[in-house]
Image (tube, rainbow, N blue to C red):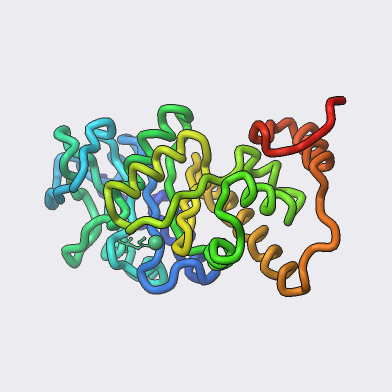
Length: 276
Ligand code: 13P
Ligand code: ZN
């Protein structure tokens, strides 16, 4: 219990990924947030779970996560600063038994609180855990080309997904279920939290038009890789449009061949392929 928690693998992962995301330009100022579900024994190896530093109220009910531990980024905290001051910019919290507050066990040393997007994170964790027992991470960031695409492309989920799939051969393999898209909404609210979580029943990637993207996954690499792949496709789309538009693309049959070759199931009705 006397081990230095900054050396803990999950703290190191948060420090490294936030620095990486900042370097990529997807987390300007305090943009973006991450929450990472931790096992009690992971936390217990470094902290006394009975030593609660302070209790932080929440605006929504997270009873379904009562007793669960998370490491989360702080509200208003800059990703660029996490690597140098993890104990100020990150916090380890446990959801109280009432589901109406979180108990701070480490971090947020300057009196900080968890991300303002905690409703979207917690509600998404609840939904993803129902369908994926390995689920652990929700990541939100302001991926540049994805945001840009929400101004120039149809926001219809099938159309948007198909364009991303067509931009890079890997896309349909990485996110065969496609991407969910919300209408524009005010961030940090219960309402956007509920809408995001509802999409998370079907998708691991959810786009907030003119704002950013949410990803869900069981490891940091998986969730980062998901967002990175969608953002790369959006970047290629940006370049293709700048070069005057596509003259040819990956056909629906080729997308189907990819899905078959990599043993994934493309979202039903998204590809138009003849009966074999
Ligand atoms: P926080 O600083 O509260 O995490 O908010 C950043 C953000 O990206 C809001 O959508
Ligand atoms: Zn944001």
